[in-house]
Picture 1 (cartoon, rainbow, N blue to C red):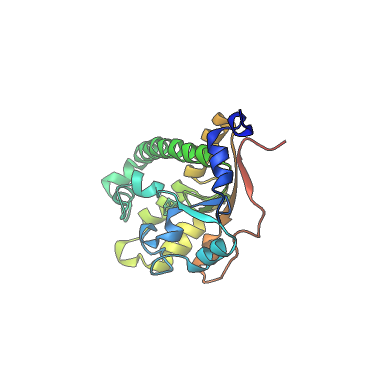
Picture 2 (spheres, helix red, strand yellow; picture 1 turned 90 degrees about the horizontal axis):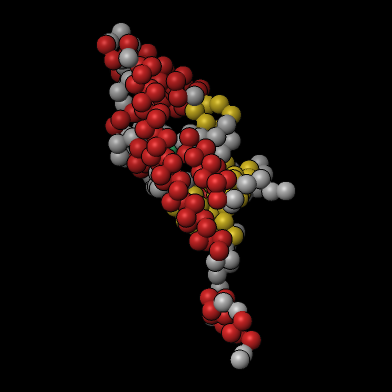
Length: 233
Ligand code: SF4
C-alpha cells in the first residue's frame, strides 16, 4: 500500500498535476462585467468596468460572474416589472402602490433566495476544492454595505413626469439619493443562505457613487471586506 492510498484521490491528482492556478476566485456582480444589465441610465461603460478587471487579474483571481438578480426577478435586461410606478402620481395605479410594492418585494425575495442557494452551492464547491473565495458586490441589489430604500426610490419615480426623467435625475435622485447603509436584497438572501450552511464569504463593495461620478477605485484594498455568513470567531 502506498501513501497515496490514504489520501483522497482528488488531492493526490491535484498535487501531481499541480499547475499555475492561484486557487483564488472572486464572485463578481454581473453588471460590473456586463453593464448591459444596469438600470437604464446607470451604465458608465460600454461593456465592463475595465479597471476592476485589471485589478482582479493583477491580483491573480479567477473571475466568476454572478447572475444579475434584478434581470431574473424584474423581467429581463430592461427590468420591465420595475417600471409600473414610473410617472404614476395622480393615476389609479399610484393608489395601489402599497400593495403593489409589497407583492414586488415578496417576489423579488423569492427569486433572490433561489439564486442565493445556487451561489452557495458554487461557494461550497470552490471551498471544498481548496479554492479561496471572495465576493464583490455593487449597490443597490448586490450592495454589501449600501442598499436602496425601495419605497423612497419609487416615490421619486412616481412623482417625476416622464418628460422630466433624465439620466441625471435617475442617478442622483432615484438611486444615489435613496441609498441607505445596509445589505442589498440579494446580499441579504446570500448572507442567510451562507449562515444556514455555516459558511463564510469575505465580500467587498464596489462603490456605485464613485463609478457614476467617474472616480477610479481599487476595490480589494479599501474598505476592508465584510464577512457574509458565519462570523469568524
Ligand atoms: S447590482 Fe446586482 S442586481 Fe443590480 S444590476 Fe448589478 S448585478 Fe444586477
